[in-house]
Image 1: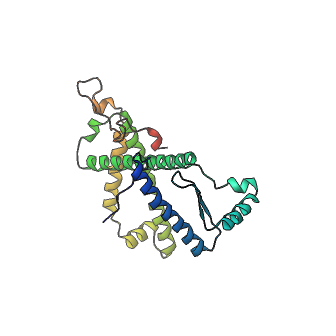
Image 2: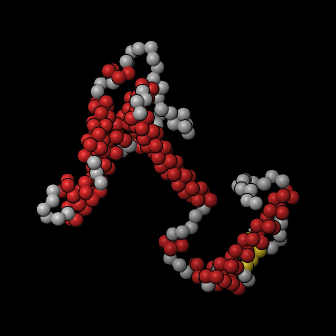
Image 3: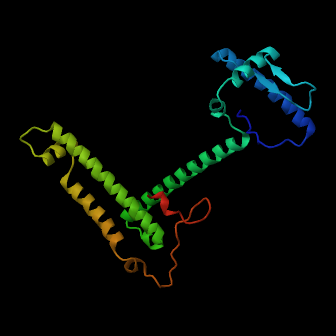
Length: 233
């Protein structure tokens, strides 16, 4: 059975807070002891609480003094290099979460544009429901895919050039080595050209601007705003 995730907030109930303190304090001291034993490092712990008259010290007053003395002898830059407060820790977590959110939004938008391209190849009129921002994102995605196709074709040609006999042409060796069909390549190029022509045609010819039909933009599922273009640098 999975453990329930604990909400990190102040416990208002006195008895529950005291019980949690005792349980967590015991676990913390156990972890410090394990860390010292397993890794062979110097460590100490000092815990002040309103439930005890004297602070909790581990492993002993002499051991704590030895570790603190070693810490005080360090240069100031070394002392503060890895020190974090609760505020700085939360800021780091927020920044990391924001970067993950940006990456996820970008991935979702790319998948959405790929789905639109596949639907268009099946004859769907999905372009009629897109606004100019969506069309711009789609054009950028198409350009990216075309560059990727060209890069992969260049790689295959380089491999074929190194592997082919001197009396064969590069195109013949590529077809023989990788099983390419000339007609299939031609169909793929025609589909690519069809998409490029569609995107280069003025939007008034496709969507009837000024008519009664309202074009719904692609929405951001997180904040219900349009997806910004910076996802496609």
